[in-house]
Length: 245
Image 1 (cartoon, one colour):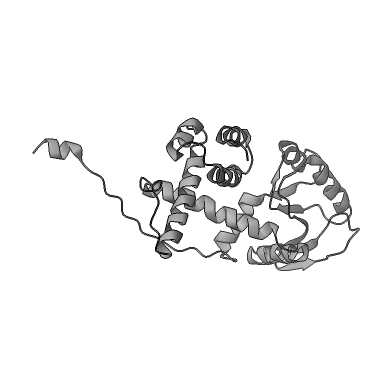
Image 2 (cartoon, rainbow, N blue to C red; image 1 turned 90 degrees about the vertical axis):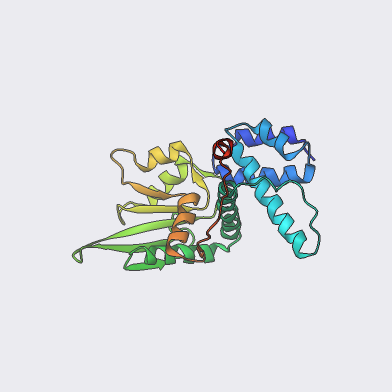
């Protein structure tokens, strides 16, 4: 088991998928329990303050579970503020959704992308599901104003890491002679080189949808993601008012 300091150092090196990766590291810290929660947050500093928020959210969930079983022993979550709870909760649902997406069968993930495109305005979306097709997973048709239409080839990648420029170039090569519009959807992310390649001058542009955008779209379209409005109360003590009595 690594020390809390080592976990913190790993957290500071995370640049992509910040909230999701921080949550994973914080879970490991909970198992190690080096120092108090506040000490861990103080060491994290302002850059990684969300580490503490995620940890607090997990402790709060653990407390709720214990209370449900008749055990109320918990001493770390009493100082949680509503905004901290909200931020941690936002990271929590993304973590759970990310796990769900990456555990899907490849064909199921392709069907999910098909559904998203249909719900987003594509008039026709077909999943090819053929191997040896240059990485093309499906074809969609977009109609503009009821008059113009064009085909879009798309690729679905269930990745936990980064997609590089090479994958974008290969996909563009498979598009040649078929269409000049492409779309890559992934649960992971794209390297800066991949983003530059997708918009390179003189080459057909390829639109990129990374994991964060994918989760936002699922939430927007309410596809497997339900949003409930929660009203919270925050009580603030006005010290100046009391001193003026």
